[in-house]
Amino acid sequence: MNKLAPSILAADFAVLGEQIQKAAAAGADYIHVDVMDGMFVPSISFGMPVISSIRKVTDCPFDVHLMVQDPERYIEDFVKCGADSITVHAECCRHLDRTLHQIKECGVKTGVALNPATPLENLTYVLDKTDMVLIMTVNPGFGGQAFINSSISKIKRLREWLTKENLSTDIEVDGGINKNTLPRVLEAGANVIVAGSAVFSGDIEKNVKTLKDIMK
Image 1 (tube, one colour):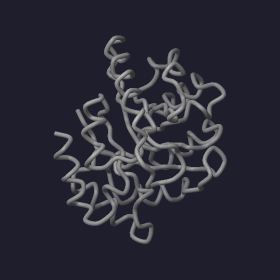
Image 2 (cartoon, helix red, strand yellow):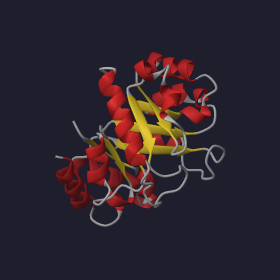
Image 3 (spheres, one colour):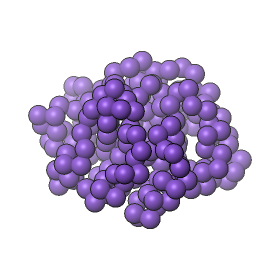
Image 4 (cartoon, one colour):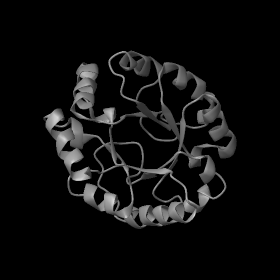
């Protein structure tokens, strides 16, 4: 089943709670929360206090994407703040298997993100412990980047791999998703779609419904 995860990184922070409520009411399946530390990526976004605050305005599941170095330091804190799933970058974890176990022990879903240049083979020994694989379709750290076309073949290869292994792991995509790129990633095998500007620029409710219609 295809699911839409609007990224609040593209929202208007002055009215963040209101915009999250609009997206959820229009049919968003998740709220995607990009946490950046200024080390793994150049930007700094937000952390636990913001997530605790917006948790109060919606019951929509929080899909928390940790673009931070050594994320195991913060997993329990983000779960306490309201995360329903936590995705960590393979590039950031010294012991990825251990980190995934830590997330599972906290009672939330696990995700592993791969940067555009990171090979799928990095997942070989943890795929059975991963509820979702996030294929970055831009380089992480900034919103509004152009979609990287080579991501399509990567998504296809991952979908074939999951099918061969008889795994129900979700494939999430993040970066440069709009009305033009969305059909391509769906056809390749992605089923969880992160969209920032495509949701929060303009009429949020209309944008969500437009994207959801394409995903049917």
